Length: 476
Image 1 (tube, one colour):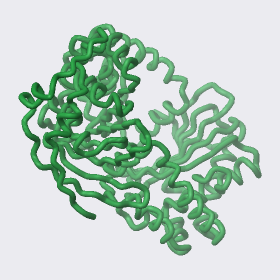
Image 2 (cartoon, helix red, strand yellow):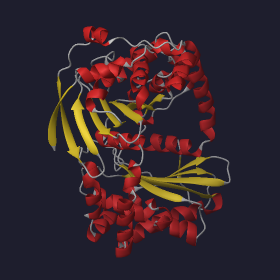
Image 3 (tube, rainbow, N blue to C red):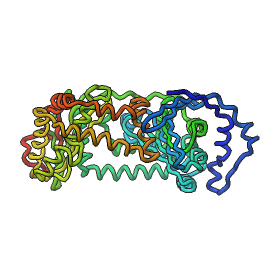
Image 4 (tube, rainbow, N blue to C red):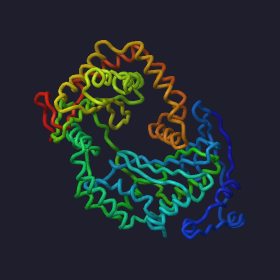
């Protein structure tokens, strides 16, 4: 690590000098103020400290902008594209009861007009700049991303700044969102994955915000004014974190980020999310009746926090169990040997609010019982006999060898950095990660299998008209 002191000042003026007004793009009029004008409008920028992490995968520059926004930047001069990720802790789980869908309409509306630009004019401005900008809401995070040619970065970020400063929430786009959601309310009733999620949430954590779902009544309660208020609650300066990759320096990027954040509220309060404990009350089997020739089988058990020493042994074990495609035991047994499914897979979710080790696959209704029995049998075999030395070696080779593929574009690198920031893994995580995989031992993996893969710890959810599964507890 080393610290460099950078002065903004003249470079900030240079970045701003190419800025047009957003309205000017619609009329093909670009205002480029003279340097004397800018010197009168922009005060000298304060000194900004930049901490540089020289890593194997990326050279990450960390700094706080003069406006107080925390940024991680990878300067990549070889590709003339700037990718920016922005995120705020707080998402759809923060929707007030009875207003489910509120965070979704907020993020849906962010590129649907701002200031003098209605939805069509805003979209036209993005096309003229050859840029993209959009936002999304997950349970605990609200995120926005920008991708633009570096040459257009100042104008593109000015357009994004307008979206945060004066979002329109016009009736037209708002009503379009409601119509799309109403269609979704109907189609989800025949979506096996959605029905499985609903059944599991109602059986395992019915009173948690993660179990709430959008309804016709909650959609009817939404208004543009309520959405505007929620946008100001979710998107604040104090919770904003930024990652960026592109042909820019910290002193060039900082004023652009500050322009975007300038009109956000300083702070707000969003409710904390209480963690779900899946170990408390597993349900052996839940069935949702859905007339279709196949049954979707999902299974879910308690997961492992990233801070737990067992996480990486479990991560490596998951590759052999069900995460390694055709190299996994579940695929070899249930697809290749028995012909029960086209595909089955497993994954670990280290979200501290909802730690899970889960999997899923589809099979004919007639073979649903055999499929479930096969999953449980593979769990028991791993508990009793563990993995082989060859399986451990293969898992490590794949997990370490494929890791660089997540860094082959500016957008991917920005996304990887954002995930590390959201999970608070540390700026050196990219360099430690493969070593953590390699450090997993044969004994580690087999101990974790014995502790975490007991079928009795897992809830099985089946959607379809399954046969051969006994007398399960029905879905509520």
